[in-house]
Length: 383
Figure 1 (cartoon, rainbow, N blue to C red):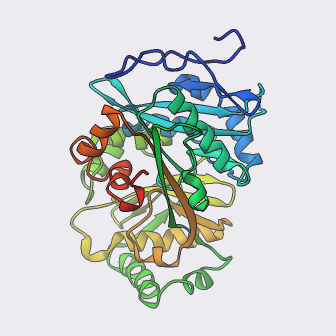
Figure 2: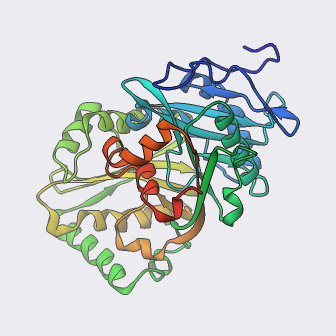
């Protein structure tokens, strides 16, 4: 605890640079920007983040904070929460959640968002979101960061690269992406599927009917399942999760973090599980996190059959928006409402760490890593 009451935890030792990055808190505007490090410290700020998300029109983005901080991917990195214009209590103008990559347990000074839409990265009203992101990036660069990759909701144009804040040794780049975000649901199944392509409509009806007639499929809206049963269904699915992700997925079913969890399934005539789907709800908004389908029944397109049942159920309960975490390869994505997302990359010009990140990104980052793909994008060449 600092003399001014700001909670700043000590960072881990790093491969390069000092080990006390955050022992000072430069001002941006009037108020300092404290940095909270680690899951426990960040979760203490969750009530303030939930209130901030309500004020900023980003309802629900902080509700499941504990769940995402405990994901297998997140546990391989160190989370940092930067609170912009904090005045104490819940009076926070903006918050930025980033993760520092680790190598052999040591911090690298490379910080990045953990979701492709930015909805959980920058929590602030649209009017000040870019300013909040810029202040957070400058704070990290002042502390010695090698690179910071921030994704936020909204399209902010070329002004998003103006993040150097007087740093002659920091370069930045930005891009705006159109992201298919959600399927808008009407109050009736037939009018909702009318928004989809003709082939998608036919497939939804055909594969649902086929599953019902040939497999005796019935929809179970609220599934109860032990961890062992969940592991067994996962092992018998077409694309099984790793053990770590299976444990994490099931943890939400056991501990919904004071939120409403979606866990539904399809059973055949013998009572065996054909398909399971899991996600989260916030009022009239539902987010699908995952789906698993029994192996060996690919000709029944269980993914499509399940979505037909699920659409009918969600419409009946009053859901108006259906999100898919990480997107979906299903053809219904072509009917999604798209929104703009801005990515900003700031890198130190004369930094061994930054050079190594650029030079060896394909070797040190996973193939489907979001930061890796950004570094390979010509739009994200820092200047």
